[in-house]
Length: 110
Length: 117
Image 1 (cartoon, each protein chain N blue to C red):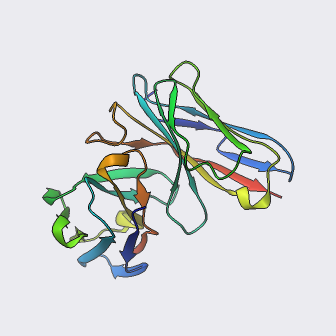
Image 2 (cartoon, each protein chain N blue to C red):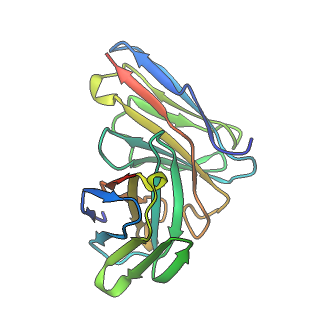
């Protein structure tokens, strides 16, 4: 199945700093999504982005499908951005089996 | 309800005990997923339902794990004869989409935290 690797595994920022999280995937995908898991365990969908670029407030994401990676940008980080960010991807022919990476744990300090 | 609801939120089971975890998806959502998340790792796919049909159960780790969604709404994940390695958070998710993840937003519940002692 698809292998999904995320980097860095941990990231500590000062409030107001910018950051880039990376997701590499091993094969062609037709579905790629970014999620944020808050300290209470809730997973929130941030972006559906199998290709191209999307922006939502201080967050944006870019996927370059031909080079098998996706980037999540967080600008002007806030303490509420803390948590674990997951990237998940699936093949076109098995759309139900979404594979998650191990996540990037982000800590934003005031 | 407004979101995906899971119960119990926390469960401590003695090794060998059977447990049942419940998921109430968002009303009208066709697709329902179960994931297992071990500490410090990403969620791992267990099984997928489209309405009442279990279309994919390839992720269930052993025959001790069983899931059902008899009326196409509420789902139950049952673990028989629990082992310590079953300790994890069990996440349920639902989507309006008929084709699994597709382009629709997936909504996750807060999870059921299972500890087997």
